[in-house]
Length: 254
Image 1 (cartoon, rainbow, N blue to C red):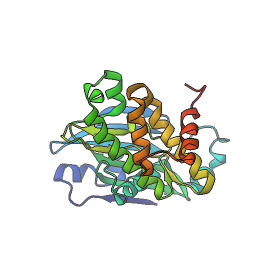
Image 2 (cartoon, helix red, strand yellow; image 1 turned 90 degrees about the horizontal axis):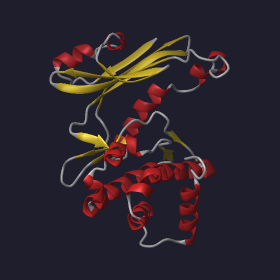
Image 3 (cartoon, helix red, strand yellow; image 1 turned 45 degrees about the horizontal axis):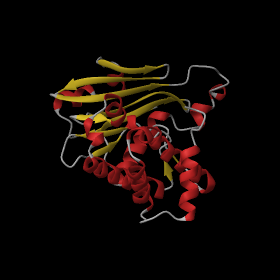
Image 4 (cartoon, rainbow, N blue to C red; image 1 turned 90 degrees about the vertical axis):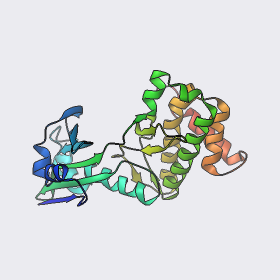
């Protein structure tokens, strides 16, 4: 059984290329990334660029895939990713435009799937900015503008009981507008949690952000982000405990 959705507003060439899951798996383009279970292509159609993420079912160690039960009982990463992008849009978090997605199952088992997003033009991920020493990271006004957007988006996500689980600088895109605009991308591991499990995942998200921030930003800038995130003017005793957990989260693992 196959299910497929494509944006009816796609221009003609893209509409034909993304008309079905079979057509998407036949596409050729620039290989951006590959793993045993997925690949990412960049294709140009109608003068626009798109990212095509294709996933296949777990063909590895039978113990790891629970002898075929894993793909029957759990949502495949491709489905989680398109649902998470839709959730971001619902929470007002800017992200890449989702233009097509779907999957194929056989006997309840995930076989393959894909999702396609339109490229966010003239953007760069924040990890690349850090690696290249982008001068914008030394501009206090620019950092403050991005930090406020990031705090608001992270707060909205966590308020919904959702944790990204890979909230790293590489998954944050920035454009060159003035003021800059921030976008969340790539979230196949995000999930909803509750109680102490959510509390732990929220700390992990904050720690992932701070993993690079502590080398690129000043302590006042990092504190300002956290205060914007909790919407307070100063830290409470409870906040100090959370900050301590964030700072210690990756201790000994870097």
